[in-house]
Amino acid sequence: MASSAVYRYVASRDDLLTRLIVQSYDELGEHVEQAEAAVARADLRDRWFAVGHATRRWALAHPHDWALLYGSPVPGYAAPAQQTIGPGTRVQVVLMRLLADIVAQGRAAPAQRRPRPVPVLVEFGAGVGEALGVEPDGVPADLAVAGVTAWMMLIGAVNSEVFGYLGEGGEDAEAVGAALFDYTISAAVALLLR
Image (cartoon, rainbow, N blue to C red; front, side):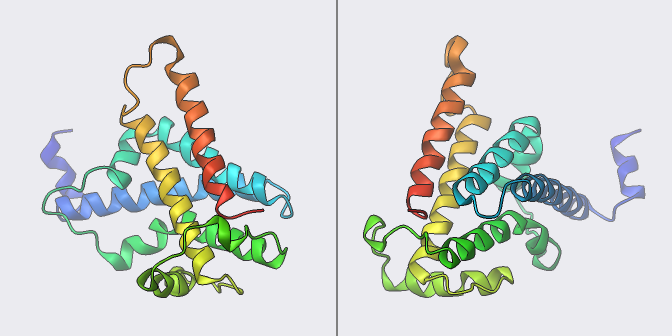
């Protein structure tokens, strides 16, 4: 098929990008949701690790899709929020529910373990659950901010590996990447869970 033939099926380049982005977010979201659901609800630490490892596995298996989602923005393209926000926040919804379970079980890390967020972050943290369409169930704003921070640490660790920021690494590149990833998500969960 000639490259121009794709326009028989989509209206424009932006429509094609939106479809690819939504499909990739949905595939990632489904992969993570299934991995997290397979872990006992009471095992909060393993649920976090399931989310992290499922995200990493999917990204390494689909590096071009991952780059479309978490790499450099496509010049001149603005994702339509009404189509991309739902699929694009599936993993964050899983994490917000995990935070609610952490609070419900009384297992939240002491606030002293986390940097104290500035007022703008407290306000942001107070609205995270609502923005995701998840009832926050008593998740304090500073814990919600720590959850967003943990997610950012996870994305950074995956990006470092997928985009080759760790260098060549020689024969041990895969082992080093996996070990650094585990170290990063262990540090992130320490912000959330006692």
